[in-house]
Amino acid sequence: ANPAGSFIFDCENERLVESFNFPSTYAAVHEGIFYTMGSNYDWASNSFNWYIKTININASGSAQGSASVSISDGIISDELTRTIKSLISPYGIHIDNQGKVYLTDAVDYKNRGLLYRFDKEGRFIDKQIAGVCPGHFAEK
Image (cartoon, rainbow, N blue to C red; front, side, top):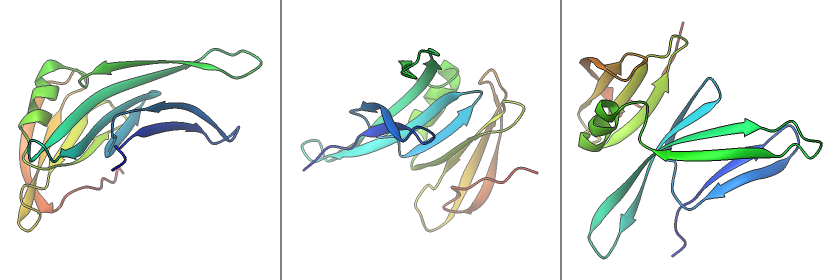
């Protein structure tokens, strides 16, 4: 089996910027930084491995259009990262225009899920019951 991976592609210049050996199943972008949650199944342990990453791309402005990429484990704060790790079935992430972070948990994929809200520093605000498989966000 081929392991899951993640790719950053420059659509304007039609070129691959970077590839990574971890999955990014769910992602959000805020102020040019990518926040990702991804999983793959480990047949040996009969469980999912979760990858929670922050990917920062800084264009160098060179003639070749190269970029430097830095990756760190976790998202915004330890509290937010711990919450993601505690979710039963992480199903979505969104960061609004003000920097508030929203996470969803599909729980069992057949009953109503949960929506978690954090401030821009990654501090927990509240948790709400959402619809079944809450994975999409709309901002007005």
